[in-house]
Image 1: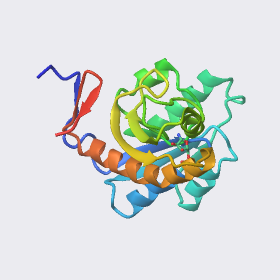
Image 2 (image 1 turned 180 degrees about the vertical axis):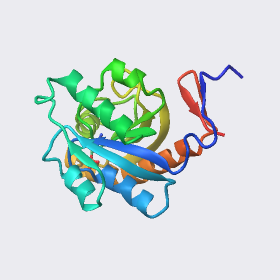
Image 3 (image 1 turned 90 degrees about the vertical axis):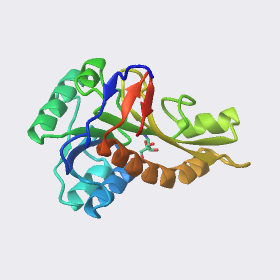
Image 4 (image 1 turned 120 degrees about the horizontal axis):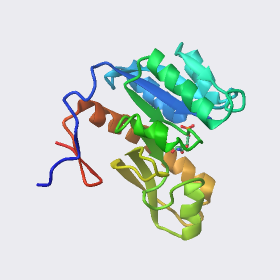
Length: 215
Ligand code: GRF
């Protein structure tokens, strides 16, 4: 067995874990995580929701749940560096253990990511490494693949390239377009994100090469 690059303690962080969610839009994945926390299906609480769009539906959803929610404007904060600096402050103030990206439409800088090794998770609507980046469902339909799906992964400094925590396959059917495929993938995303976060929080996993090895 090769030496692990990283070994997660058990549990990974003190429980209940404090989770920050970064989003830009609808927030259905945030909602799935928040509902799982509220129902005791995840040993965690959402301590912070941040959006780079103050009109994001996800922010309203967070406020309806009484969660700490902040809409930030990169423009008002002097650009990407200012936005990330403010996010970092909020993460520290709210004592976040982990960050879950849930439809956050910005690429975090390598400097930001390197401060949170194996502490940032993302969900992507394809079976990575196929179809990274924007419009993953449209890419899958246009390519003509028979299966696509969802990937939950740790975030590294690339775009959708970090170690994979879990994947679930979804069929692409004849006549599918990006919308119909997205609608089939989305409910799968919600379950996959909750289950992946639960596995991560449990700890005892390790990183070998680029694989996440669970006990
Ligand atoms: C999801 O498809 C997610 O995989 C992708 O962005 C979308 C966000 O949807 N990264 P929602 O805001 O969670 O509803």
